[in-house]
Image (cartoon, rainbow, N blue to C red; front, top):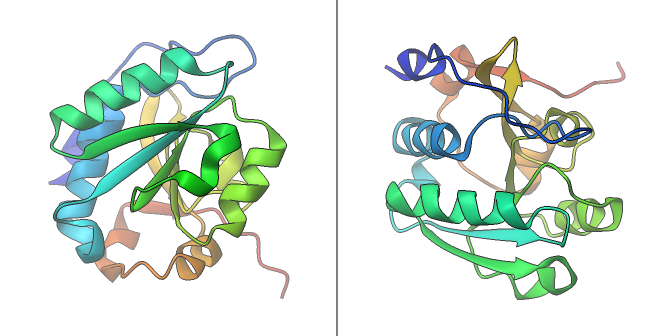
Length: 167
């Protein structure tokens, strides 16, 4: 069950000013389970492109290592080369600049992050974020729709919706 993974405790390892505190090994395992159970388009033979800059090189290396260990195909491109990203999923580390966030959003791809602010602002489809020192899933429905990713509705039992609708 997915909830069993969420209950694990972990140490906060974020650098000052960065909200990227869920360790890559937890992100990888959780996202693999989410894909297998709730994202049929992203279940098999999925590739992830980590987009990085000089501020998040260490995060990039950890994400590549851990996501590869759970059988994702992972590559990386520098932020200036986002248009060369080949992955089905774009991964944005927590310390990403505003221009890259806007470019990732405009790409209409599934964007994964561990930064809650990116999901809340609509720059990412889904985040595996720190909430009270535990990993939690959050999603931006509008971004999920723009990525045209098929989602099993059972996922919404476990995920927090981050969209702020103006009704």
